[in-house]
Amino acid sequence: MRYLTAGESHGPCLTAIVEGVPAGLKISESQINSDLARRQSGYGRGGRQSIERDTVEVTSGVRFGRTLGTPIALAVRNRDWQNWTDRMAPFGDAPSDLVREVRPRPGHADLVGALKTDTDDCRNILERASARETAARVAAAGIAREFLAELGVEVFSYVTSIGGARYEEDDPLMRAPDYKPLAIEMSEVRCPDGAATEAMKAEIDRAKAAGESLGGTFRIVATGLVPGVGGYATAADRLTARIGGALFSIPALKGVEFGLGFEAARRPGSEVHDPIEVDRTAGFVRTSNNAGGLEGGMTTGMPLIVTAAMKPIPTLMTPLSTVNLDTLEPEEASKERSDTCAVPACAVVAESEVAFALAGAYLEKFGRDNMADIKAAFKAYQQRLRTMSR
Ligand code: EPS
Image (cartoon, rainbow, N blue to C red; front, side, top):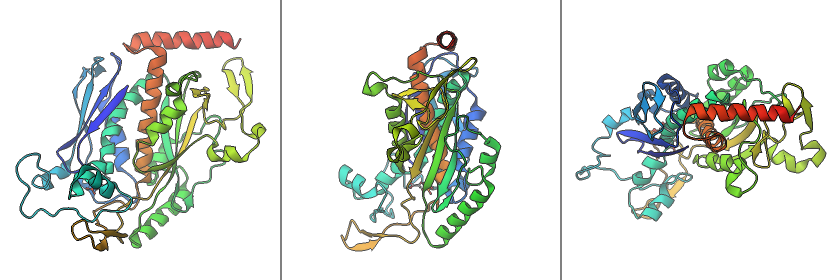
């Protein structure tokens, strides 16, 4: 299952095409819209989110609520487009009063993109490098999530830190994460802990008052996985590489850790690896989950637990110094309307990438054509695993 997106932040719409989806998968428009709403939410977001009401339009590949097994095309319209029709017009001449973007922001794709593509207007770069593009990813990932849900897999996320404010979990690598969807989604920063939520909001308030922006960390968890998805035989099969690569396609991500992550490098082997036991009903289980649900590039059957770090947003209301591309003189970087913090939204985008990576690996293991065949193969596999642990 693969997706491709197109679209500029202030163009008419964002588009996604998802291919490799089996036939007969039930798709819910409202489920996709609720994921889009989660991506728009979060304390510390800027003015754009009060303009947009992201909803999905499905224009191909689905009939009567079920997939046809053909490419699925999705659109998310930009309401803000109506304010940009002259400055972002696909055809005709540029307006005579057009203000080019010539003060590249450190940390954004502005400068390097302009050098690479030979343009004197960083807008040609920033329109696409904008985090707005992630709305199309979240819409596309709705398909992957529905597929995984049919096989009992659920993907969720929560924020573990914003700036210096942290949510200290008792047991972050617990065997069965205590998924608290209500507490997560009720929190304005998508953190299940009330005190940590308040501390994170206070950090955002301080940053906003100082014209600053803030990054943070979040955890993505997938439950209900069966062991043996992914592969150990070739580099391309390894689910660790696929999930890591998928997450690093999110522009603002600077770090990804699986399970114990960097902490594993500081401990002896006996305090890292997860002992194996056999349980009459559950089959082969682990007494800990330091690996974060992946061993040898494959799922172990324990929850997948990935922690990711997002850098602060590059647009600063108290801007850093840059160079004006016209005069080559030092100047303040441009100040586009922006978010103080988008960590809660980034966690939702990261869920989408993990869902795509997992859905692709499940399809490779259980077949691709239609849901009935896939479910039959899935059931047979579970049956064989049960026999092997008895
Ligand atoms: C975003 C839309 C953008 C930004 C933000 C994310 O809208 P606008 O540029 O009109 O304010 O708010 O983009 C960035 C943080 C960025 O660096 O480009 C969205 O819908 O997520």
